[in-house]
Length: 170
Picture (cartoon, one colour):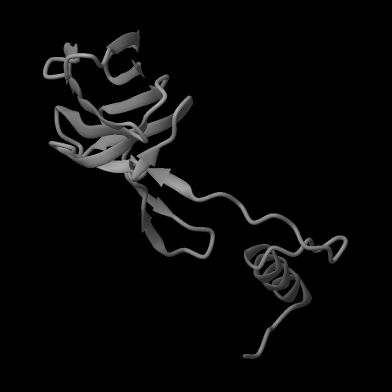
């Protein structure tokens, strides 16, 4: 390419240097400019189009505290209208906690259902079902239950759209 003037060459060099993140004055690398937001679309500094993920409309954070002397074994669970962000582990040891997070799939809400079996060296202790529903103004733990001899205490922390609960099993 043939450049016809010194001013055009300087402008072209400055534009190219800025595009690759180099300062013209110092020659040092500069942080690239952020993407330009256009709703859920964006334009990167290099000019390509990108799509920003939209935040989930509803989330659930459930802290499950095993305050018993038995191990809690995860038997299964599901997230109606959502997906696992931090899914449950296979076991929750005695006197420990686990945080489980789910997010909606951009619908009106999300739910989470978790089934656990408690067992210890002396035998079976019982079962626990943890349920949280977070659908707009309907945030509740309907469906949560425990076998006789097992105590399940749900503690409400925060409601919709980001429901937070602490469940203590003893």
